[in-house]
Amino acid sequence: MKPIVQISLDLTNIDEALETAALAMRAGVDWLEAGTPLILAEGLHGVRALRKAFPTTPIVADLKTMDGGYLEAEMMAKAGATHVVVMARAHAETVKCVVKAGKDFGCKVMGDNMICEDMVAGAKWLEDLGCDYIIHHIGYDERRGIAAAGHRMPNPLDKLREVVQAVKVPVQAVGGLSLEQAIQCPKYGAPLVVLGAPLTIDADAFKTADGNLEASLRMICEAVHAQDVPAFA
Image (tube, helix red, strand yellow):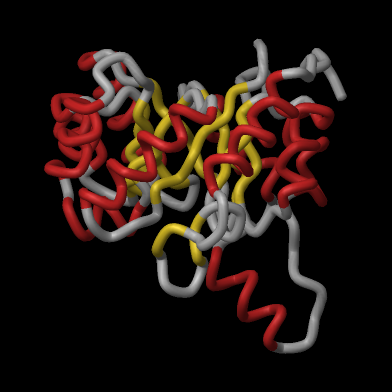
């Protein structure tokens, strides 16, 4: 598949999310993500607002589902989400319920391997349970805690190639990527490039970053879209 650019709207109010989403779409972003902060703050209203404003754009609802999988996926799909996120650390039955709801309501399922002791095995397990995509994810608190302790901050690129090798579904890498690293993801065989904190969102205040965001996003989108994703990288 050709590379896809997704922006994570890790914001806490609908108006700013809509404004940032419109800017992102002008810059060439392909998918919008209702980030976890937006879902916590605005819930289904945030997803509905994005769907109303962008009727044909794929919308990822980053629920990070751990339980009650069928109902959560159903609610978000009916609100307009085209993709929902379930965690690998959830029970297998929860993942299966999200996958079932995805089939019932026409919504794709993204399995997130964050906090798995074996990230590669976690990704494969999610694929085996029916997830359509894999999110290879180093968590926000984990990264900051390790860095604060004086150690090298973990990076999703560290094992990205191994994750891509282990599964047949598309993979995205999330978690503290620099601009240069995000642009490199397709070269690792991961076609879904996610832009969020710290690239486009203020990671501490969870608001749109200062500066010429639209111009930066346009440059990133052009660089990503110009690449071919190897079948195996």
